[in-house]
Picture 1 (cartoon, rainbow, N blue to C red):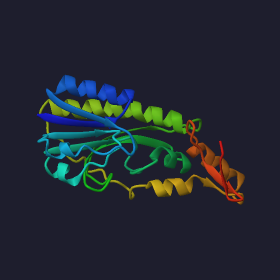
Picture 2 (picture 1 turned 180 degrees about the vertical axis):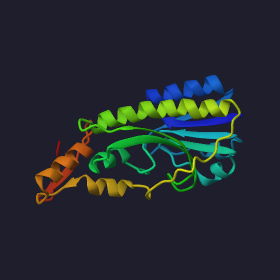
Picture 3 (picture 1 turned 90 degrees about the vertical axis):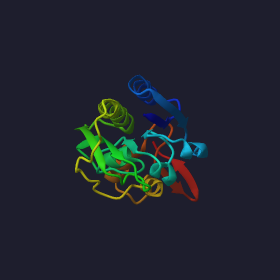
Length: 214
């Protein structure tokens, strides 16, 4: 079986996932990228049996999906949080449980049939950084399970679990992280917790000037 592995550049979890894939399957082509990188058009006609998207920054072209026997994506969130910024959204909504999802890919992001999930608790002390780190660890464990199944020649099939909402967009994410002077203290704390990560944070516009709040 020939495999195309698509991942995030300079990410240790992607490196571990690729190493496992190369150990379990004989013919693996890998591509890594960042947000904004162009997708290699030559891959569309590469004749791959399996396409695996793992923290990939690309939306896989429809033509490649249609030419592939099995195309799967690993999403670092549970089926209740499809789309962009799912960790922040879960914290903003006060979720008590989070998870990771493997699903068949479809042309529309995070809409394909779900294959498997792993879930875990969200703690009051969690931040974007801690919840994301745990998500990546659980996702790698899920990856070992699913790719191990592929390597053993076992077919992947839908679990019957469903996505529970439409995919959250980057536009919605950016709107939700904005702060305004009329927000309550509770709402401000809620958004600051949910949208503060490394050098990024929620923003507030004052007299036409945009400030980052952390």
